[in-house]
Image 1 (cartoon, rainbow, N blue to C red):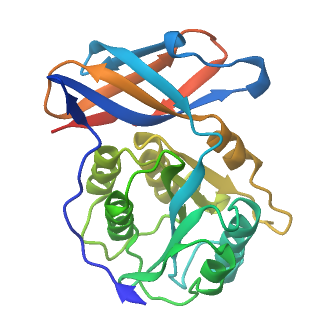
Image 2 (image 1 turned 180 degrees about the horizontal axis):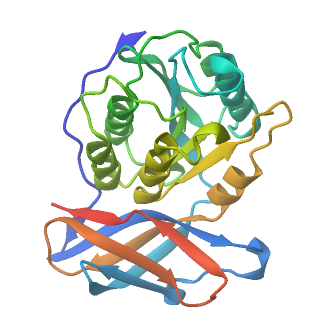
Length: 280
Protein backbone atom coordinates (compact mmCIF):
# COMPACT_ATOMS: atom_id res chain seq x y z
CA UNK A 1 0.00 0.00 0.00
CA UNK A 2 1.40 3.36 -1.03
CA UNK A 3 -0.21 6.79 -0.76
CA UNK A 4 0.27 8.79 -3.95
CA UNK A 5 0.91 12.51 -4.37
CA UNK A 6 0.02 14.54 -7.46
CA UNK A 7 2.63 15.75 -9.93
CA UNK A 8 2.59 17.58 -13.28
CA UNK A 9 1.43 15.53 -16.27
CA UNK A 10 3.32 15.47 -19.57
CA UNK A 11 2.11 15.49 -23.17
CA UNK A 12 1.99 13.20 -26.18
CA UNK A 13 2.53 15.93 -28.74
CA UNK A 14 5.84 15.71 -30.59
CA UNK A 15 7.83 18.05 -32.80
CA UNK A 16 9.36 16.54 -35.90
CA UNK A 17 11.31 18.57 -38.44
CA UNK A 18 9.46 21.74 -37.45
CA UNK A 19 6.04 20.09 -37.88
CA UNK A 20 3.75 19.38 -34.95
CA UNK A 21 2.16 15.97 -34.76
CA UNK A 22 -0.23 14.62 -32.17
CA UNK A 23 -1.35 11.06 -31.49
CA UNK A 24 -4.78 10.58 -29.94
CA UNK A 25 -6.82 7.42 -29.24
CA UNK A 26 -10.23 7.23 -30.91
CA UNK A 27 -13.13 4.78 -31.04
CA UNK A 28 -14.88 4.26 -34.36
CA UNK A 29 -18.23 2.90 -33.24
CA UNK A 30 -20.24 1.02 -35.86
CA UNK A 31 -23.60 -0.65 -35.35
CA UNK A 32 -22.22 -3.66 -37.22
CA UNK A 33 -18.42 -3.69 -36.75
CA UNK A 34 -17.82 -6.19 -39.54
CA UNK A 35 -19.67 -4.06 -42.09
CA UNK A 36 -17.20 -1.20 -42.18
CA UNK A 37 -13.44 -1.04 -42.00
CA UNK A 38 -12.32 2.53 -41.33
CA UNK A 39 -9.45 3.92 -43.37
CA UNK A 40 -7.27 6.93 -42.67
CA UNK A 41 -8.60 8.60 -45.81
CA UNK A 42 -12.14 8.37 -44.41
CA UNK A 43 -11.40 10.63 -41.47
CA UNK A 44 -11.84 14.37 -41.36
CA UNK A 45 -9.90 16.01 -38.51
CA UNK A 46 -10.09 19.59 -37.29
CA UNK A 47 -7.80 21.07 -34.63
CA UNK A 48 -8.62 24.53 -33.36
CA UNK A 49 -11.20 24.80 -36.17
CA UNK A 50 -8.54 24.21 -38.84
CA UNK A 51 -8.11 21.14 -41.02
CA UNK A 52 -5.43 18.71 -39.87
CA UNK A 53 -3.73 16.09 -42.04
CA UNK A 54 -4.05 12.44 -41.02
CA UNK A 55 -0.58 10.91 -40.85
CA UNK A 56 -1.54 7.39 -39.77
CA UNK A 57 -4.31 5.28 -38.25
CA UNK A 58 -3.26 2.22 -36.23
CA UNK A 59 -5.68 -0.32 -34.79
CA UNK A 60 -5.48 -1.07 -31.07
CA UNK A 61 -7.42 -4.33 -31.48
CA UNK A 62 -4.35 -6.56 -31.17
CA UNK A 63 -2.61 -4.47 -28.50
CA UNK A 64 -2.29 -5.53 -24.88
CA UNK A 65 -3.61 -3.30 -22.11
CA UNK A 66 -1.42 -1.27 -19.81
CA UNK A 67 -4.09 -0.08 -17.43
CA UNK A 68 -4.91 1.44 -14.08
CA UNK A 69 -8.04 0.22 -12.31
CA UNK A 70 -9.52 2.77 -9.90
CA UNK A 71 -11.82 1.37 -7.24
CA UNK A 72 -13.85 3.88 -5.22
CA UNK A 73 -14.02 2.35 -1.75
CA UNK A 74 -16.59 4.69 -0.17
CA UNK A 75 -18.99 2.58 1.92
CA UNK A 76 -22.05 4.81 1.45
CA UNK A 77 -22.30 4.04 -2.24
CA UNK A 78 -25.34 4.21 -4.54
CA UNK A 79 -24.74 0.73 -5.92
CA UNK A 80 -27.92 -1.29 -5.09
CA UNK A 81 -25.81 -4.05 -3.55
CA UNK A 82 -23.43 -1.67 -1.82
CA UNK A 83 -19.66 -1.64 -2.13
CA UNK A 84 -19.68 -5.43 -2.31
CA UNK A 85 -21.55 -5.27 -5.62
CA UNK A 86 -19.10 -2.74 -7.06
CA UNK A 87 -16.14 -4.88 -6.04
CA UNK A 88 -17.84 -7.92 -7.55
CA UNK A 89 -18.29 -6.04 -10.86
CA UNK A 90 -14.62 -5.02 -10.84
CA UNK A 91 -13.62 -8.62 -10.12
CA UNK A 92 -15.74 -9.85 -13.04
CA UNK A 93 -14.06 -7.29 -15.27
CA UNK A 94 -10.60 -8.49 -14.24
CA UNK A 95 -11.61 -12.09 -14.96
CA UNK A 96 -13.47 -11.53 -18.25
CA UNK A 97 -11.56 -8.71 -19.94
CA UNK A 98 -7.96 -8.75 -18.71
CA UNK A 99 -5.57 -11.25 -20.33
CA UNK A 100 -3.56 -13.16 -17.72
CA UNK A 101 0.19 -12.86 -18.20
CA UNK A 102 -0.16 -10.30 -21.00
CA UNK A 103 -2.05 -7.18 -19.87
CA UNK A 104 -0.27 -5.07 -17.24
CA UNK A 105 -2.41 -3.65 -14.45
CA UNK A 106 -2.11 -1.24 -11.54
CA UNK A 107 -4.72 -0.94 -8.78
CA UNK A 108 -5.67 2.27 -7.00
CA UNK A 109 -8.19 2.19 -4.15
CA UNK A 110 -9.45 5.75 -3.74
CA UNK A 111 -11.21 6.98 -0.64
CA UNK A 112 -9.78 9.04 2.21
CA UNK A 113 -6.70 9.23 -0.01
CA UNK A 114 -5.30 7.79 -3.22
CA UNK A 115 -3.76 4.44 -2.36
CA UNK A 116 -1.56 2.44 -4.72
CA UNK A 117 -2.12 -1.21 -3.77
CA UNK A 118 -0.60 -3.06 -6.75
CA UNK A 119 1.56 -1.91 -9.65
CA UNK A 120 2.51 -3.42 -13.03
CA UNK A 121 0.88 -6.74 -12.20
CA UNK A 122 0.22 -9.37 -14.89
CA UNK A 123 -2.00 -11.54 -12.68
CA UNK A 124 -5.45 -9.89 -12.49
CA UNK A 125 -6.42 -12.20 -9.61
CA UNK A 126 -3.87 -10.40 -7.43
CA UNK A 127 -5.54 -7.08 -8.20
CA UNK A 128 -8.96 -8.58 -7.45
CA UNK A 129 -7.74 -9.78 -4.05
CA UNK A 130 -6.71 -6.22 -3.12
CA UNK A 131 -9.97 -4.46 -4.03
CA UNK A 132 -10.90 -2.52 -0.88
CA UNK A 133 -14.45 -2.29 0.46
CA UNK A 134 -14.15 0.29 3.22
CA UNK A 135 -13.84 4.08 3.21
CA UNK A 136 -15.63 7.22 4.35
CA UNK A 137 -14.81 9.60 1.51
CA UNK A 138 -14.30 9.63 -2.23
CA UNK A 139 -11.33 11.15 -4.08
CA UNK A 140 -12.10 10.14 -7.67
CA UNK A 141 -10.61 13.15 -9.40
CA UNK A 142 -7.38 12.96 -7.40
CA UNK A 143 -7.19 9.26 -8.28
CA UNK A 144 -7.71 9.95 -11.99
CA UNK A 145 -4.86 12.47 -12.13
CA UNK A 146 -2.58 10.16 -10.10
CA UNK A 147 -3.43 7.26 -12.44
CA UNK A 148 -2.66 9.40 -15.47
CA UNK A 149 0.70 10.33 -14.01
CA UNK A 150 1.56 6.70 -13.29
CA UNK A 151 0.77 5.67 -16.87
CA UNK A 152 2.72 8.60 -18.31
CA UNK A 153 5.80 7.51 -16.38
CA UNK A 154 5.69 4.06 -18.00
CA UNK A 155 7.66 3.62 -21.24
CA UNK A 156 5.52 3.72 -24.38
CA UNK A 157 5.45 0.37 -26.18
CA UNK A 158 4.11 -0.49 -29.62
CA UNK A 159 2.62 -3.65 -28.10
CA UNK A 160 0.51 -1.89 -25.46
CA UNK A 161 -2.18 0.76 -25.16
CA UNK A 162 -2.63 2.87 -22.03
CA UNK A 163 -6.10 3.16 -20.51
CA UNK A 164 -7.89 3.80 -17.21
CA UNK A 165 -10.88 1.86 -15.85
CA UNK A 166 -12.99 3.41 -13.09
CA UNK A 167 -15.56 1.66 -10.86
CA UNK A 168 -17.64 4.09 -8.79
CA UNK A 169 -21.01 5.78 -8.30
CA UNK A 170 -19.73 9.20 -9.34
CA UNK A 171 -19.49 10.73 -5.88
CA UNK A 172 -16.43 12.86 -5.13
CA UNK A 173 -16.42 14.68 -1.81
CA UNK A 174 -12.76 15.06 -0.84
CA UNK A 175 -10.59 15.59 -3.95
CA UNK A 176 -8.22 18.50 -4.23
CA UNK A 177 -8.61 18.20 -8.02
CA UNK A 178 -11.76 19.41 -9.81
CA UNK A 179 -13.70 17.60 -12.53
CA UNK A 180 -12.38 20.06 -15.12
CA UNK A 181 -8.78 19.49 -13.99
CA UNK A 182 -9.21 15.72 -14.16
CA UNK A 183 -10.56 16.00 -17.71
CA UNK A 184 -7.68 18.25 -18.71
CA UNK A 185 -5.12 15.81 -17.30
CA UNK A 186 -6.59 12.95 -19.36
CA UNK A 187 -6.68 15.11 -22.48
CA UNK A 188 -3.08 16.24 -22.04
CA UNK A 189 -1.94 12.64 -21.70
CA UNK A 190 -4.25 11.33 -24.46
CA UNK A 191 -5.48 8.53 -22.19
CA UNK A 192 -9.14 7.46 -22.42
CA UNK A 193 -11.14 6.44 -19.36
CA UNK A 194 -13.88 3.79 -19.26
CA UNK A 195 -16.28 4.08 -16.34
CA UNK A 196 -18.65 1.55 -14.75
CA UNK A 197 -21.42 2.94 -12.54
CA UNK A 198 -24.91 1.88 -11.39
CA UNK A 199 -27.91 2.90 -13.51
CA UNK A 200 -29.27 4.46 -10.31
CA UNK A 201 -27.12 7.55 -10.96
CA UNK A 202 -27.43 7.72 -14.77
CA UNK A 203 -29.93 10.61 -14.81
CA UNK A 204 -28.57 12.34 -11.73
CA UNK A 205 -25.80 14.90 -11.46
CA UNK A 206 -23.33 12.13 -10.62
CA UNK A 207 -24.14 10.35 -13.86
CA UNK A 208 -23.94 13.53 -15.92
CA UNK A 209 -20.49 14.27 -14.53
CA UNK A 210 -19.27 10.73 -15.20
CA UNK A 211 -20.55 10.91 -18.77
CA UNK A 212 -18.87 14.28 -19.28
CA UNK A 213 -15.61 12.94 -17.86
CA UNK A 214 -15.52 9.93 -20.19
CA UNK A 215 -16.84 11.73 -23.27
CA UNK A 216 -14.41 14.63 -23.00
CA UNK A 217 -11.49 12.19 -22.67
CA UNK A 218 -12.52 9.94 -25.57
CA UNK A 219 -13.82 7.05 -23.47
CA UNK A 220 -17.26 5.88 -22.41
CA UNK A 221 -19.46 5.40 -19.35
CA UNK A 222 -21.39 2.16 -18.91
CA UNK A 223 -24.38 2.37 -16.57
CA UNK A 224 -25.09 -1.11 -15.28
CA UNK A 225 -28.46 -2.64 -14.34
CA UNK A 226 -29.33 -3.37 -10.69
CA UNK A 227 -28.77 -7.09 -11.21
CA UNK A 228 -25.15 -7.69 -12.22
CA UNK A 229 -24.97 -11.39 -11.38
CA UNK A 230 -24.71 -12.40 -15.04
CA UNK A 231 -22.82 -9.34 -16.23
CA UNK A 232 -20.74 -9.53 -19.39
CA UNK A 233 -18.64 -6.74 -20.84
CA UNK A 234 -19.54 -6.98 -24.52
CA UNK A 235 -19.95 -3.21 -24.95
CA UNK A 236 -16.50 -2.54 -23.51
CA UNK A 237 -14.92 -5.33 -25.55
CA UNK A 238 -16.48 -3.88 -28.70
CA UNK A 239 -15.17 -0.40 -27.88
CA UNK A 240 -11.67 -1.76 -27.25
CA UNK A 241 -11.77 -3.72 -30.51
CA UNK A 242 -12.90 -0.61 -32.42
CA UNK A 243 -10.16 1.61 -30.96
CA UNK A 244 -7.38 3.21 -32.99
CA UNK A 245 -4.39 5.48 -32.51
CA UNK A 246 -4.84 8.48 -34.79
CA UNK A 247 -1.76 10.54 -35.62
CA UNK A 248 -2.29 13.92 -37.24
CA UNK A 249 -0.17 16.80 -38.42
CA UNK A 250 -1.60 19.86 -36.75
CA UNK A 251 -1.55 23.60 -37.48
CA UNK A 252 0.73 25.73 -35.28
CA UNK A 253 -0.95 26.33 -31.92
CA UNK A 254 -0.32 26.11 -28.19
CA UNK A 255 -2.26 24.90 -25.19
CA UNK A 256 -5.60 23.11 -25.34
CA UNK A 257 -7.15 23.16 -28.81
CA UNK A 258 -10.61 21.86 -29.80
CA UNK A 259 -10.49 18.52 -31.62
CA UNK A 260 -13.16 17.13 -33.94
CA UNK A 261 -12.83 13.78 -35.73
CA UNK A 262 -15.46 12.62 -38.21
CA UNK A 263 -15.73 9.44 -40.26
CA UNK A 264 -16.75 10.50 -43.78
CA UNK A 265 -16.63 6.96 -45.13
CA UNK A 266 -19.81 5.73 -43.48
CA UNK A 267 -22.69 7.77 -42.09
CA UNK A 268 -23.65 4.87 -39.78
CA UNK A 269 -20.49 5.13 -37.73
CA UNK A 270 -19.54 7.64 -35.05
CA UNK A 271 -16.12 8.61 -33.79
CA UNK A 272 -15.41 9.08 -30.10
CA UNK A 273 -12.35 11.20 -29.38
CA UNK A 274 -11.18 13.63 -26.73
CA UNK A 275 -12.81 17.02 -27.22
CA UNK A 276 -9.44 18.76 -26.99
CA UNK A 277 -5.81 18.04 -27.83
CA UNK A 278 -2.91 19.59 -25.95
CA UNK A 279 -0.09 21.36 -27.80
CA UNK A 280 2.82 22.50 -25.57
